[in-house]
Length: 332
Image (cartoon, rainbow, N blue to C red):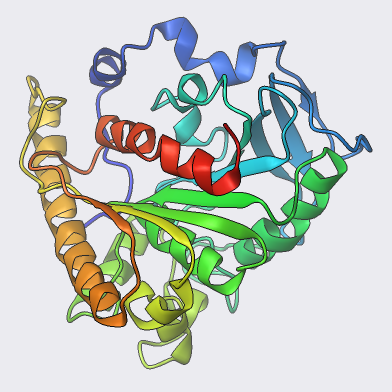
């Protein structure tokens, strides 16, 4: 089982998302006002008005690349977009697998897309993974809630007017970050997230998925299955701490939909894989919905009748959540 980005053939990606080959390299080669690759030196106190930039931000893990599309009118709000289990080291997939940049180009919110973190669940790990020779310990929660906001504050982005949204692995991570850092986040969104990690079989499934995605040892992340760290990072368990947040939670049925048109054998494999992953996400998300209802905590839920565990559907859900995000961050 793999939790995260399914491996679509490139021609299928381009056709589904309507992107040309030039658009696929937009984050690296061109921006609205010209792409720059910069260090963390700027000391301006007002966010740039529009434009795309890639920066290297210092962290305890070493320099982390962050892709940024600045708020159109220099506003102080930011939306963090988190990747899936197979997060790449060169680009955040939101920047090229979806049209997120176009969706928010004219809005007064900065898109913040951290790069890297494969199999990390964006957590602070206990130790480096001992299965794959990892040299440093993942400290993604620290990076996203302290080191990155420290940098963004020098560029005019508020520490207290942020949203966070992710897919799959990033979906549960988004809720976790928002629950424990309420001073930072006003909005949290989960798309096809695994929101009931304590359910039977889920811990074993995550273990297998992380071995498949980079040979990471889950015990280095949250410890053995009986460790309290598993409960701390389970949205079903910490649900009461989400009260008062603006929340958007989505999962499709797993049935093929408008963006699924397999032709080659690899396409059929990826579609079948995406069906299974999305069905599992739906079971988790429905359980989370019931839990939230018993607590009397409102959220916006989206359960499309068709859709697999794949980027075109997450791109569509991001657009559906747009007005709610802009309202929560006062970023219209």
